[in-house]
Image 1 (cartoon, rainbow, N blue to C red):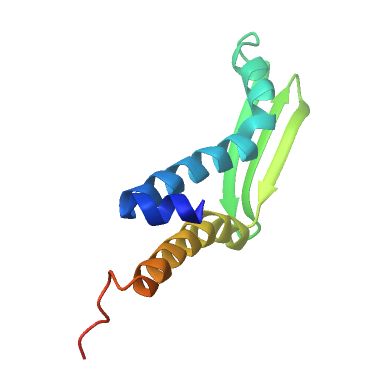
Image 2 (image 1 turned 90 degrees about the horizontal axis):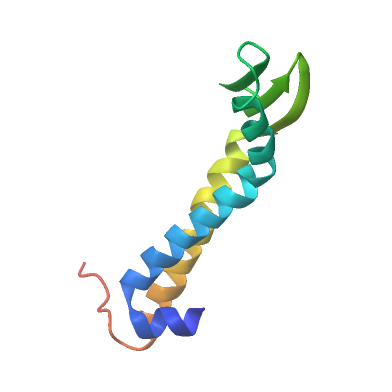
Length: 109
């Protein structure tokens, strides 16, 4: 991956970040999709999808006929770290490679 980032430049870091975020969304919400599908296609008044955010983080509850069919939650710090750290690490790795190759001049003081 780093070899690709070195050859392609800064745009590939952005594309890699977008791909990472798409995969993160798919992995995080993927298990909930069948339950959401069933709830949205159930007869009117028999299902409920609830999303809430509070001190404990973000929660998603899907219920049909009063029974929870899927529940999930994530703390805000965990979510922020999952969203921010890998793309920043890729950017720092790319920048470090560029500096090691002498393509980026150090900042003027």
